[in-house]
Structures are given as C-alpha cells and as structure tokens.
Image (cartoon, rainbow, N blue to C red; front, side, top):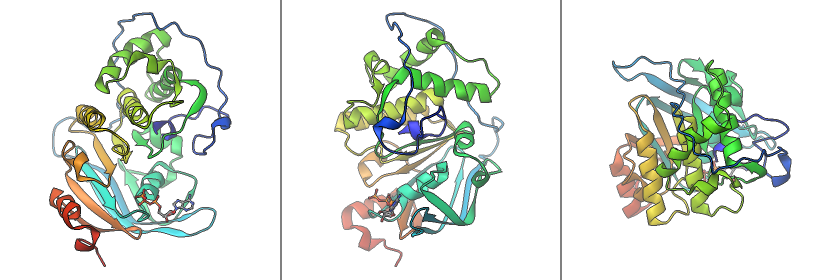
Length: 305
Ligand SMILES: Nc1ncnc2c1ncn2[C@@H]1O[C@H](COP(=O)(O)OP(=O)(O)OP(=O)(O)O)[C@@H](O)[C@H]1O
C-alpha cells in the first residue's frame, strides 16, 4: 500500500517492515461531523513545463538487484523507458521479478542494487533515499497493503500530505482544512466517510484496501504511480471503480507503471506499452495485443526464451 510509499517517515515506524506492532503513533481524536469547505489543490512535484513534447520521466538501464540478505539474484538487467503521460504495464509469470522491480524503484531495503542505473526526472534515483523518492513524486501501491493499528487513515494521510507540502514550501494543512480537502476524494473511489476514521487498513476487506490505496494516491498526487496488482481480489464493480479513479487522476504529465496478470484491468486502463518480464528481465515490449495473446495462449506463446 501507499503507506509504504516512503513519503511517510514518521518514527519509530519502519514502513518497509511487516508486523503490526512496529508503529506507535498517538492518534488524535477528531470530530468528523465537521463540514469544512476549504478546497486545496493536490501538490504536484512535477518539474516540467506545460505544453510541448512529452518529457522523459524514467530511464532504467541494465538494472540488476539481489535480495539483500541472501544475495540471491532477482533482477538481471532490466531496461525500461517511460515518458510523461504514458501507462506502462508489466506482466509476467509468478516469480519473474515484477514486484521486486517495483520495490527497487521506491528503494525497498530488502534489495540491493548490483548494477545499472535509474534516472528519474533527470536525477539519479539510486542516490535518493526512499523518502526523497516519494517526495519527488514517486508513489507505490503495494500488492498486500498492511495495517497500521492505532493510526487513523485521516491522520496518516494528513501527515503524508503535509510532508509533501513542506517539501514544496507550502503551508501545512490543519485537520479541518485537510478534512475539507480529503472528503470529496472519497467519492472518487466510492468509499464511505467512516473510512477516514478507521485505522489504516485495519479490518478492511481486500477490495477496501485497494480502494484505500487509490485514495492515498488521489490525496498525495504522483508523477509516477507504481500500482502492483491493484486488481487482485477486486469484484467487478470495485475493479471498475478503482480503474475509473486511476484514469481520473491521469494527466498528460503523470505516468503509471502497473503490474497485473489480467487483461480485464487493461480494458479499463488503456496501456501505452506492455512489457513481459521473465527471469528478472524485460524480454518483450508491445501493445495491448501482447496481453490478448497471453490471455488466449499463455506465456509459452510470448516467452523470450
Ligand atoms: N525479500 C525476499 N526474500 C526472499 N525471496 C524473495 C524476496 N523478494 C523476492 N523474492 C523472490 O524473488 C522472486 C521474484 O519475486 P517477485 O515478487 O518479484 O515476483 P513477481 O513477478 O512479482 O511474482 P507474482 O506474480 O507471484 O507476484 C521470487 O522467487 C521470490 O520468492
């Protein structure tokens, strides 16, 4: 989930580790019957001008990575180039390295880079701490969003949002102003207002967790959203809602990198390119027809080996 978007660096919470007991944060009590009408635009960290040709957003070259602990090699020379406004989809068999690639982009400590480079908005991403990557507009929704007992959704979102505003030199929003900002965004993902008061993902169904991820994306805004299997566990209506919300957040300036196993998501969110990952490398790139062949004939039909 996006709480592993390293935007959130409040201590002593290690947001990259699992386990419900690691976060201690005193939840402030809010009265959500308040109806605030303050409207604030989502901050954008985009450094690009408006108009003109799309700019290069992400350039991954020969990226290799191992698991930090075991030194097992997972990524074995990934190459990928994304321009602003594009939607890229990574597909591939279970265990081919898709989630690892996504996590490496946000600086997950489980992985160590052993070669190659990642340039994001002209900067060396590998030189940036996870928090800096998030503040530079990188957002990741995780395959299995975790719960944070004791931290309400609204406090969590408010903190993350203010961190981004601080970075942009903008004044922070207090609880009432923030409530006015976030409440309308719930409609986008078809979530009830009570979700703001509940602890982050605690007791949420799989579908609610995924919607909550997209709510976080809507609140924070992102230049590059990395969405790891946002369609898993969603019913047909939820899939449509989540896809609609993702589409609604798309502009000519921001980009999406999506991991999915299924064509059905791509019927709602139109990809610019589809990449097939196999054994830690992207072995094929093409348009939607790749996903259609895959759906019909399986991986043997498009395998790079
Ligand atoms: N932290 C880790 N510790 C041990 N093994 C790991 C770790 N991270 C990844 N792996 C292993 O690396 C391989 C690639 O995993 P990854 O999650 O990237 O695959 P994936 O393509 O996303 O798979 P899926 O489609 O099943 O989600 C798998 O064999 C996985 O078990």
